[in-house]
Image (cartoon, rainbow, N blue to C red; front, side):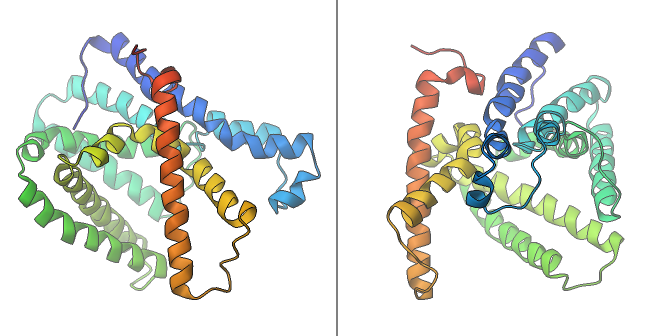
Length: 286
């Protein structure tokens, strides 16, 4: 829905490198920290509780080439380029719908039939995301003029349906057939997209949630690291052992740990917006 080709391809490419590719490589360095640390200090393997053989070459390929760090940023970068190329030639809406549908169905089917995804830079996921972007471009006006009330009414059942589909897929409650699996995945993906677009519309006037949405790249990039820090603070430094506590106590401690992680993320976001703006593709604001 926010896709734009303004300024020509050169300006478009530079913009996407700044806002997607640079953040990917900067924040994905975190994923190389553990294998490099184990390589330099082998005794850390026991501390990390892992028996994995951390080959540095493999890990660097996995993060820097395969795009398996913050994979969504890499996939979204590919999707933007694919969508740019398609929209230059597929001018009318029906053609965009056909191409978008083909991209979505073919990539989901590829996964459902167990075919290997050996392409680097998250190209397969990027093609899939491009399909959704094309459909978003066509339906953009529908979402822009949707009222908050309609968004809320649509959002609740859509998210509930996605949750049910996830249970069906994970628990294998229905026929284990690749075609049926493809259908469920596509149905869940479309319903989820509708649900979360409606959620974004519904919270548009909620200032603090909207701010998190605007700065979502920081929250996405640092959430795993920050949650680990929060867990270390709660469970190691404070010495809280929740494993033998009643369920309600575990729930409370888990909620408080999550709240601590969000607070830390908010502080990290302020620092990045103020001093490390270049890592997220923004211009310096005095």
